[in-house]
Amino acid sequence: MKLDFDPQELDRLADTLAVKVAEKLKSASKDQTDKVFNVKELAQYLGQKPSWIYAHIGEIPHVKKGGLLMFKKSLIDKWLEPVYCPTALDSLVLNRRGGYEKG
Image 1 (cartoon, rainbow, N blue to C red):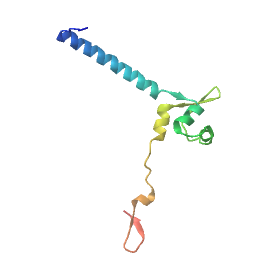
Image 2 (image 1 turned 30 degrees about the vertical axis):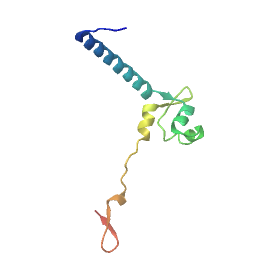
Image 3 (image 1 turned 180 degrees about the vertical axis):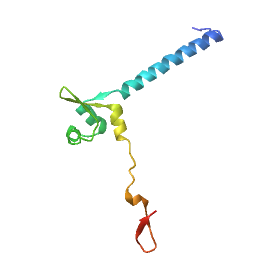
């Protein structure tokens, strides 16, 4: 079976296809970002046991609704990002006498 398209029809078809693919990708991305984990799912996502989640609940961003702990994936991913925290020692330089001074 051979299909013949004139160039304008082919352009419209390509544009329509591009829009549809973009919509699918956007909705798939949103579905993953807005996912909400329960304790068991979060433990699996982090590679930990549920008991670890409960032990660190004060550090993990969460919401409690109706007695259930809920964790939004986007907030968990942000929480997992490394943060550089300079210490006072980072700005100290060794002087000639073997002591430290501010750099």
